Image (cartoon, rainbow, N blue to C red; front, side):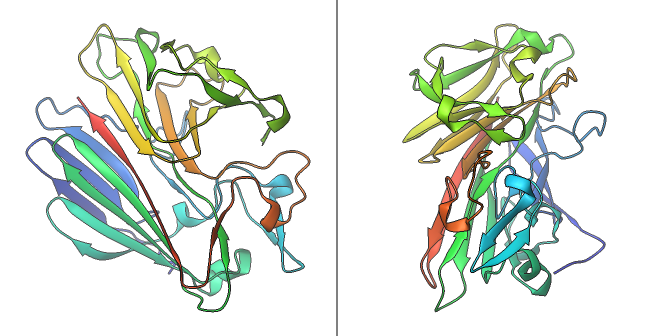
Length: 298
């Protein structure tokens, strides 16, 4: 469904308040009620005009912004269309909401699958659990898709600290494969071993070539911490195959995104065939896919 206006949804418990826009089912605020700190990036267009978009039905950029399926070519911009569509509310309570997006005539022009995408936000203490459910609504045909989160966080979190007072921390502390970017596309053949077995000091130059992309498996917790404040952020996720860490390149932007992904950008030599796409997810007719990640603030 396409509408011009979207409503804001507010969730609240004893510890945090969260606001979500019906546009893109995007989280737009995450406040600590004890000190009124908003941990979520507020969308300053000087740096990045989004806040926590969902990436669906693709993560990253397609080669030449297009793909082929069943001998037809479709065009699609980076990260897909869900972030710009108006979602409907399925159900809501004081501490949880589920929003959904259904395929329609407009979506089928660029993505020829019948789907229902449900996004649920659930508050628990000082955490927000974000869950995605993708349902193949076609009883006869399979479905290909990717999905991911892109939450951005304010760094620094306090007036007394600076961007470079913070560091990235990883649990478990072990090396993970780092996938470099070459322009808009991943350079999969030149993967290296990323040094996530230790903390990484935040420096803007880390992001000169765009995102840091790691292969992940099992349970992971990626955190933004500082020795100069007790405030920080953790993003925990299980079985997501990739995670991106991003800040806008060469802008000295006061934000960092931690992005769990079931999907990844194309390589420069991608065939363009959807079935061949690296990281693509597959659903049988009428099948469902579920995943979730959790943002914790302190």
